[in-house]
Amino acid sequence: MPDAPALLIVDDEARILSALRRALRREGYEIVTAETVADALRILDERPVDGILSDHKMPGMSGVQFLEEASRRRPDAVRMIITGWTEEIPSARLEEAGVCALVTKPWDDARLKATLRRALGVRPV
Amino acid sequence: MSEGGPAVDLDLIGEVALGNVAVLVVDGDGRVVRCNASAAEIFGREQKTLVGCSATAWFPEAAGGGILARALTEGVRFQDSESWVTRPDGVRTPVAVSCAPIAAPDGRLRGAVASFQDLSGIRQLQQRVLQTEKMAAIGQLAAGVAHEINNPMGFIHANLFQMGEYVADLRRVSEAVDALRKSAELGNAREIVEAAGRLGSVSDEVDVDFLLSDLAKAIRESQEGSERIRHIVQDLRDFSHQDTGEQVRSDLNQCLDSTANIVWPMMKHVIVLEREYEDLPAVLCYPMQLKQVFMNLLVNAFQAIEEKLEVAPGTGRILLQTARRGDRVVVSVTDSGVGIDPANVDRIFAPFFTTKKVGTGTGLGLSTAYNIVHRHGGSLDVESAAGGGVTFRLTLPVDGMPRA
Image 1: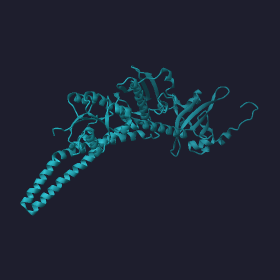
Image 2: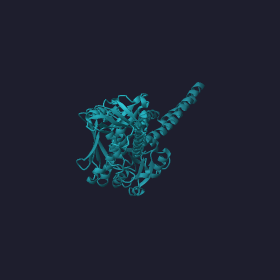
Image 3: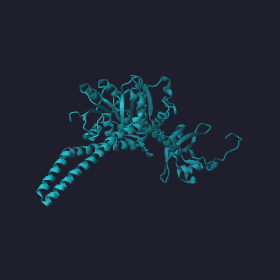
Image 4: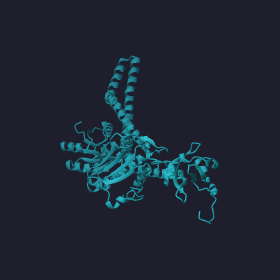
């Protein structure tokens, strides 16, 4: 697929990355993953992506802080958070970081797919 | 008894019921001369059979011999020495024993008076306070533990959904195989070719090879996740247990580790945990109570570091050390937190003293820890650590609470 939207997924839990890849297999994204914020930033330095889906509670830097960093490198990338505790992040912080969608862990398969399609502007297949 | 005053008939002691206190009067040979009515209850024998018995065995050991022997020979007084009395029916009662010598006007020791206070009620109350404090500590950990369970739950949940999809895909392949088999039975060449073609395209679409290998991988990953949850629940259950009434030999390195495992989820994002353990002899103790002390020290260390990180972001450090020092073991917890204001050092072990924000501490943690350690015959000290944090040092006798 030449125009497959590129999605960067960041989570310090490798098994979550694996499960998300599995869930999105048929969604037609080019999926790139990173287990640390440092790796994710390195990837963003090297290449553009269309969307970023990040965990929030991670060692060293929170997901929201990371997305702020990410927006400096790739301002066009759509930014999303996936976390078990959506209510822990003040909505003002979400706005500052330009977060356009929150996904709750554990996620509902259909809702996750719909959220990503909407965010990345993809028509339902 | 003063001259001319009203003489009290000593035999009347026998009628005195003093709630949960047994009173014994013993002669110079350590034999019971008189006892009160409550003694029958505490020693589990009829009052009249107690009189004349040798009382020596009921008294705990002190440094240099039995308490009663030392009272009778050296005139030493003992107060609230904790011990156990075993009744003939096997029931063991915790008691506080006090003993004072009776001296004649010429100073010669003639006997002793002793009281045995039944501590069962107090012990039950202490147990309840301990349990309350422990449950409060678990409450503080709940968020971290919930997070630690939620992550594996997240991928197990997603994997199960995906495995359901995989099974639906495999069913389509299986249906195409059935259709091919039916065509083969009917022997119509054109239908066989068509069915084989459908099977081929369904297999390609479903990507059977990938699906089978990924299905196995999804199962493996989910099993690992459920194993992690099982461990977390196990640690939590171990921690919320209560001790039985008896001290047991325990590996304190292991107690420290299993407690750190429970606290770890709440702090792992901001803290580096270091361990320097020496090989320790098994310590005679109440392991659940000591785990509670460890938990308390770890949570305090974490909160002190969090407070510091609010003004100076970065990561903190907690160092756990254990060592053997002769017949004692030393466990210390050092943090890189905000430290303790010198003005507060004398008060940190006092009940209800807290400098934590409302809702984050009961003010009972360190006082409970202090009481637990003292009940073990040990000590709990605090000192400033290099870099602004503190070290809490717990010293315990290897062979448990020394008698008296």
